[in-house]
Length: 205
Ligand code: GRF
Image (cartoon, rainbow, N blue to C red):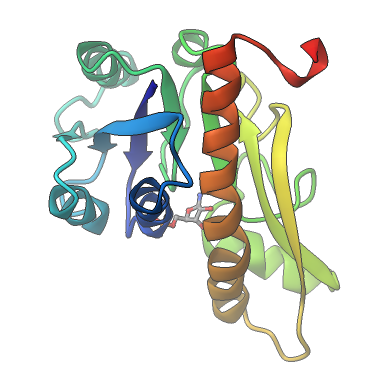
């Protein structure tokens, strides 16, 4: 059983999808042992508390220097012996030095079909606004490993959805969340935990 740490900043609906998957047994190769937020008022913290999952708060206000901020997060993850770090709406870009502590053991969910509309500056509504402005007919979500390139790690899962006529960034954001993100994140987390448990990757067979 792998020990999962979920990093959040906001509403935590993706965290909720993981909690629900844990409850219904579809997430069974790992367990959420810590929810860490970089925002004191993140609703995700409330969701974690309701599910009786330990929480931690590490903010830029407490640690204005990036190194101290990241060292503190790292210390919490070590304290809880986290095997897999899941970035679920975590709105802070982690340094390559931080990422190097979790090779193939940190994953992120991004609300577009990577490699479209991703990388530095593509977050939140900006992603969906750019997709609509470009006139794409299909968008979706991607779960990928985190490496030193923003949104650049190997892709684990994707789900697409058709963009509707008259779609707004807000409506697309909502539909991608509900139809794509909540579906693929729990499945991807289970898959990665299972692979970590068996000490195998797909390429190994
Ligand atoms: C999601 O769209 C996620 O893809 C992005 O931030 C949003 C977080 O939503 N990285 P929530 O906090 O999980 O509700």
